[in-house]
Image 1: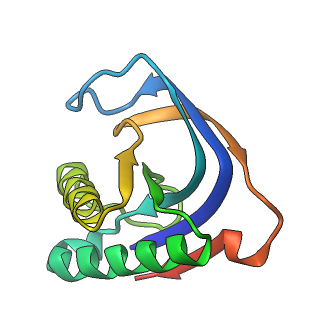
Image 2: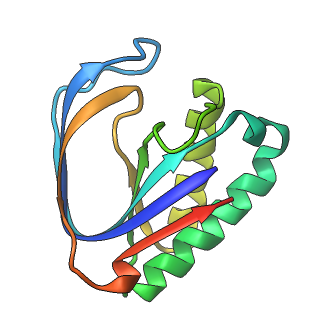
Length: 136
């Protein structure tokens, strides 16, 4: 798992290309303020122990959100950070479980549309804790 977390004063997206038709079609974009955006790449090796990956991911998201004084987290599938990819259905299941765990811990947590290339708008402050990379 590769996890690139960027604190964004503003993050927005608009769906463009639906690359995985097995997942729901989305036509509308969204915009978020003062949020930690997690660009997440689930790797093939993560399939061996998804529960441990899930737990580490939640811990890292909470830590980075706290560092940036926010309780808003956006999960974004970004399969461009490593050479191998996990099965998309397992990845989506992982995202759903992480989202639920974050919400149960009183975080506002949402996902960008899964299986899409998106136009994105990122406005991130130039401070060190606004950009954190973790290999899980």
